[in-house]
Amino acid sequence: MKIANSPDSKLPQTGVEKAVEAPRPAKADASKKTPEASAKVELSNAASALSSGEVDDGSFDAAKVQRISQAIAEGKFTINARAIADKLISNAEELVSRNQASH
Image 1 (spheres, rainbow, N blue to C red):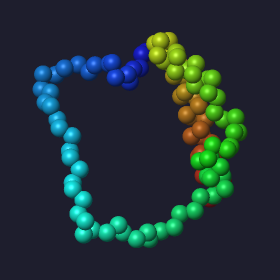
Image 2: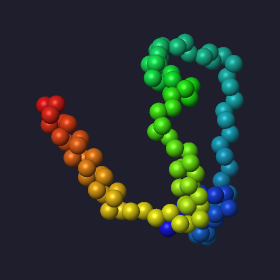
Image 3: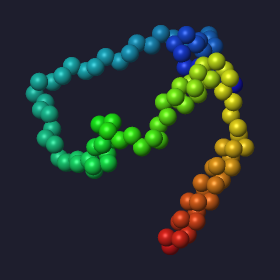
Image 4: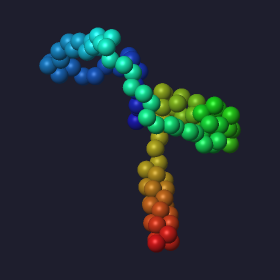
């Protein structure tokens, strides 16, 4: 299987393509004012740390992402459907048991 989202990839032509012009933004009306803020948002300490990039819990493996990206680009990435199905079933069973335990 090969997945490509590169700008070089072309979609098949159907013969009914039309040129579509992007919508133009409406002109700003000077008489309209920016609405006043009506809600206050506060981030938790954990969310603040995540957004600033301070947390490194080891859950992101850049080298692994690079290896997978390379395999996809080369068309060598294989998917183990059985492993995915087993994990989905396992996760569903865990969610059901948690839900039953909480009631």
